[in-house]
Length: 346
Ligand SMILES: *Cc1c(COP(=O)(O)O)cnc(C)c1O
Image (cartoon, rainbow, N blue to C red; front, top):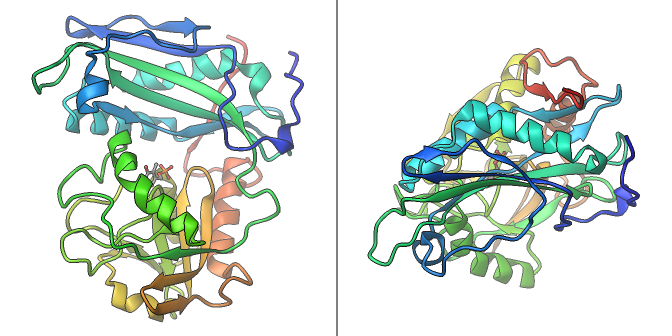
């Protein structure tokens, strides 16, 4: 099979249409059988629910090549489950979970020429999403939907090695208490655009949002969960009393890696911001970067520095990141059954 002639390691995180997308439509209470398409634009009614009341949910995962020449992705069943949970919260139909995984496999296989080679650091980013396509003018759930998967090759998250970043505590909230912060919906990103642009313009990589009810507890950043390490070497994982943290698959995997492979004690609990200065390491986790180490957090006049600050990544974050990325790339045995092979011939 011929790979596309791309400079794989020079790719950025941007959209480049590939040969195929996957599409399935929901109408009269049922999903059609779905198919691959070479159409990368949609024509839908100006009155579609997506445009007016924002019924949209999405997922993000990646396919990549392993050293021994296989193509794999990571825990796609978890993306399927979460998308189904997200859809329910917005009164959208679930896309059946087995079909979700099969569709991911089908669209990756069809775009095999776009899967970056092992060693390039690049991956094929997979973006499943669902939108309301049926007309609505009065406020109610639409009765027609489209599920789609686009794929696009993206470069390594860190071009020149992993480096600590700076974050700040914003005066904004990302999500409402018991709102939609725990689902993966575009509307949460619309909310966080302004604080994110403001943070960037002030020299911060991201925001550290506090709980929207009391502004006392650490929640998450715009698109990643926080992790901390305390002075005893325990991994401290913030929980939300108001269900406003997105359940990151990377975070849940890192918790298992810490407890079951590395013998690190894990505390999953609400974390007060006023204890953060006691911690020695901080990181943000998500599919894209696995872990982005955080060197400093700024809250008004106060600057909290973790360990070696902006100079070096802390040892626990480094070890966690390496262990999980080694499992993902099959350089370490996957005792959890997380790595999902996609056979290219069927
Ligand atoms: C997608 C996302 C994450 C990270 O989740 P992963 O499953 O680890 O990629 C964290 N926070 C938010 C708000 C997200 O949308």
